[in-house]
Amino acid sequence: MPTPDQEKVLVIGSGIGGLSTGIILAKLGFEVTVIEKNGQPGGMMRSYVRRGVHCNVGLHYLGALDQGQILRRCFNFLEITGQLPLIRMGVDGPVDQYLFTDDHPGIDHFDVPAGFEAYEAGLNAAFPTQRIQVAALMARLRRSADQLNRLSFLYSDRPTEYWFDQAEPLGAIFDQIGCSPGLRAVFGLPSVLIGVPPAVCPQFYHSMTLASYLLSAWRLKGPGATMADVCVQRLKSLGGSLRTGEAVTGIRTVDGRVRGLTLDSSETLDASIIVGTIHPKGMIELLEPEVLKASYRRRVMGLRDTPGMMAVHALVPAKQYPEIQPNRYLVQVDPQGGLLDLIFLQLRSSDDPGQNLLTLITSGHHELWQAWQQTRSGQRGPDYLKKKQDLARSLIGRTEKMMGPFQGLQILDIFTPLTIRDWVNSPEGSAYGVMRSNEQMLSAALLNRTSLRGLFLAGQSVLAPGILGTILGSFSTVKFIVGSERFHREVRI
Ligand SMILES: Cc1cc2nc3c(=O)[nH]c(=O)nc-3n(C[C@H](O)[C@H](O)[C@H](O)COP(=O)(O)OP(=O)(O)OC[C@H]3O[C@@H](n4cnc5c(N)ncnc54)[C@H](O)[C@@H]3O)c2cc1C
Image (cartoon, rainbow, N blue to C red; front, side, top):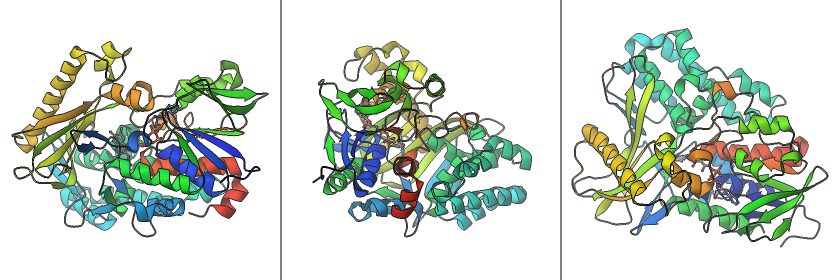
């Protein structure tokens, strides 16, 4: 139970950003309440159920979870590792398989194994004339991985220097060292997992993504809801609380300081610290225009976001279509190795023993859904449902061209950028929040702090997206809240 002198914190949003920030602050002795607009906590990490089958939204695999690795150390600090049922990937085969839909890159497939050495050997075998380029790319990757592992950006005295040091976009690096189209296509692909086109992806963000999965790749044995529930239990065990089904409609301020929140029920809550883990543009809309510096507001509202996604979940007969252990990426590139189109595929067991769950995710093409901008989930009408079905069928058709026909396939659910927009309030259904491209290195830097005293931001947009990036963002926000000295003393990851 909180004691009367504990400082009160209200956290807006119960995705991994909100729950991890809440847990860290509760561990440090703050009285934490997390407020969530949805009936269930977890945001994008939470799965949903269709015909008794759990379908994941934004949690398909995790990296760097082995002993001593970075995500494991974060989970250990949160004290949730033992509760998460994890399956290691890449043990008897690759972690990922890239299948190229045309012959531009001079390579038709590439298997991503676990481990840096195996990955380097795979690149050298696939691109024997590019050994010098492969060595140069791997040297950069290893250096970034080492800095990530040491958490230099959290614990060094000059954290921003560290980011800018590795801000060069992959496209420029490829040009400088003379990479072939095939090497560009293969090595650049992981930047798509954080929603940034490879050519403009700062080297560090690409390295963080690729390195984390090379270190070790894992998936949850259960659905994403399990991880959300584990985090909620941990928060509660520390005396924190969660209120679901209540949207924050305003942030109250007095004399340049936060005072509390207003909920959609008109109830008001008081606190001296507020952490918004929703999209930064959504945070700004919760404030009276005059309370933030105009320059900050302009900077945030002008940021470019990552695109939305469309996903299809379908059941296929398990006997005919057994599980595929690696993730598959069906990739289309241009003659220079630039990415044109990508389909992410998982085929895994489902809650229905006779059926396996096929998951297909691809770019959401926000422009296709303009006609339904003003509608809400579940109320968009028959034309929307038909368009969803047509696009899902076309996505399945493109997949079948590479994989052969899926007989007996039954579509369970289709989600579009509008679904994500309404589920988590992400602008235009952006999957990974603010885009971490090289053009936005400065404008998207240090979003954790605002000019309003007591107001902080966390969530995937403040540092980097994905479960790892978002949790690291939570730690960096807590550092701003408690100050560097206390953070160094009490938060050892
Ligand atoms: C299709 C897809 C696949 C992905 N796959 C992976 C993967 O395999 N591995 C990985 O690491 N990452 C993956 N990600 C990314 C990962 O899911 C996200 O980076 C992460 O979950 C973001 O967490 P968050 O807390 O920042 O945001 P969210 O999960 O969006 O949480 C924000 C929360 O705030 C709530 N909220 C919004 N407005 C209000 C309000 N006014 N009042 C109260 N509550 C509010 C929302 O309902 C939501 O619960 C994927 C994402 C997508 C879209």
